[in-house]
Length: 357
Ligand SMILES: *Cc1c(COP(=O)(O)O)cnc(C)c1O
Image (spheres, rainbow, N blue to C red):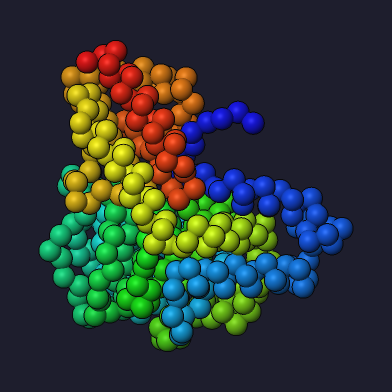
């Protein structure tokens, strides 16, 4: 296989072992003489897969009693409306930190009054708003812990006087999380956990059943809790790969070890950016993401953007083009990305700089 350095933002790099074992299961699951793609989701073999995926999820993230872990379809985007369907009675509060937060806010507004407690829209979401207060008269408070497009991140768990709901699509399993501070955590799997197609939801059961509206059956978390994520056919293949990714994570030593590795990778790249004559970071230093590292050319070198893109491509870099709303470059350094790839990108930046500055 061709060797590339995969910095894609999502779907993105996964542990090689998880992909290889998924490929084996696609050919023959546990020697059953059937593919993972052909077997009933009600079979003993698949039940064991989803049970292990959920058990590893709970163990590795430290999910306390009273919470349920669901593996569903629909993506994080469906959660943008599923959250208000289940939790919104009169009013909700949101922190506006990027495109995904805005999309979540848009859906919530269809249910009633939304209070934006803080926003970094004034500076194109290059920082995390500070000094905001969570209102006490809202049904819940929603945050996006990692802003995948802009490269800013909230890496601390804080107390909230109302149920705290977090979109952790792109930083789940990159640090230890105090789950007890959250009422809900959700995300699409395709950034740090598995292939596209599965959505994880961690929900504290006691927050459910409090709204007066009718909740469509498929959008009611209680449906999926009652049926163990199998009210309907779940995304079987993505769930299998999630199980394999979590086995890999556990074998490496869990989220603490992962966080150390992610910090090392991010430091390597941020140090290169900060000491560069031609590149500059786009996010306030204290709010920089460990998962999505955004940078641009300094104004004097802005005309070199495309040239660097081509140069990096020739060196095997994939997926470093910044999102169209930011421009420049974005290197996603998810859990499965080896530090060798980050080093290769840093070497490539330095070599380019030597030629140009
Ligand atoms: C990718 C992403 C989403 C959207 O996820 P889908 O599964 O494609 O709906 C939502 N929030 C964040 C933070 C993301 O990174």
